[in-house]
Length: 186
Image 1 (cartoon, rainbow, N blue to C red):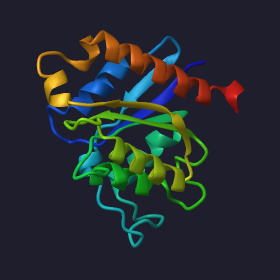
Image 2: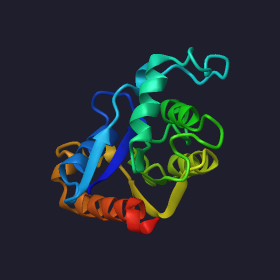
Image 3: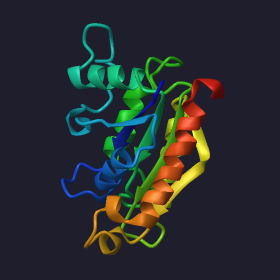
Image 4: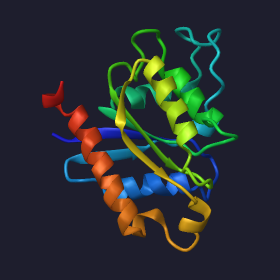
């Protein structure tokens, strides 16, 4: 039985280094671990409780919830925008936090990783992402971290999937997330 990890990428940019990091996770996933990168966060409307009612939930929100409901764990890739979490990632967390107490994140392991241009690799945004996911009901793996600084320089010539140091760290993260999601961990 494999562990299914849903990856949510907080950058919509086509050349996003965080998207590339998610692609590296897919490519280097250990045996028995399936990483699914969710597409469509850019089409997700801002959370609005007025439309979050049976029969009126926007199609993209319903699709995200369905896919997330089938995940055993989550891996959130967060760049840092003005020192904090990107709106698109926060919005996804908001949709997944509902219905209150029974959202798709509820009780499931979540790890937050990412890369950013700055010298700290987006740690402020990643900390805010952990906070939001935890409040949304996720079991945040506080000690599972990967913050890669200087993304523009580090990945100027090479895809993260081809960086041995990064893939080694990413495989370790995936192993820890899948162990937390495995049925024996429950």
